[in-house]
Length: 440
Image (tube, rainbow, N blue to C red):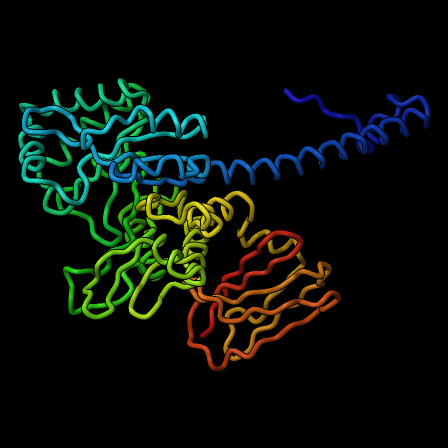
């Protein structure tokens, strides 16, 4: 039970309890002192909540075996989760990961980041005939428990934290949900976790509601909207709009924000003749020209550069609980590390706070909202390095202007811009503040 603190109302009701004016003054002083402590504590709690929010945001990077040689170049401290891929059963029932030993890379990741969680991803988008036959056999009811026990034992043997299930398309059949449910139960019983990678806007027919609920989180593969399989549909394989659609789709299927991570590609697709959507890495683009780091399209090559990744990271912060990367070995390294997309994500999540409620701290007001032809910003500018960027949802900077100290009002003519949602980013005092505004 809380003890009631004496106060003025208590004094008026029970005047005999106070024998002197000095005693009353002492009580009032004590209350003010406690109030100051309370306000200080509240401020600390608000700060800590912001820190915990950043810490709770997942940054998941897939690393396939053919990129293991890059492990010394990768900043594992910028990840919260590492998904080593892919583990599969062979014809003899052995679990193999392309003949690689994962223990050294697990040890290196944890040496750089003791709090990182390391998963092994099973299956993958391209199964060999041997692997496909092995899954069909081992997911049968008669063999399922043994297979699940084998997978859990692999996690224990290699000191991992969980399994990511990446069975896709035709490999998600009637065997999928019973397998997932048993695997999830067995992993959870030992304190391990389970996740899945799924298309952004497709729910496989054989995923039951129970199976969906069994995953700790799902990773939305919001990329490969088009590719070599659609040679007559060239274009951006991972636009911002596709990410938005994916989040809305899975929320519509009952997946809450805290169980959802937005997938982003560190690769692009090339439609320059005679190419028909062949993949290339982001790292190769910036090796060609460092200016390409700040683009999302060069000719008929479509990818996510720094602006696109910043915009999607902001979207993930606002609408989900994490961001997933396929795959971190495609990033910029060495002398180009300053252009790294993983660095971009990490810095935005941990060093800037693009949450709209914080805009109130600036006493900054945009009006009208929604707007039509003109938009205005009212703000008392105190930092001489203050500037504003206006971006579209692909992260492209449409306007960038310096804000002068003492400036109270700034207006822009938007009559020549399409009706859409725009991001207004204020950079001031070493931080970034984002406001989403609608033109209509």
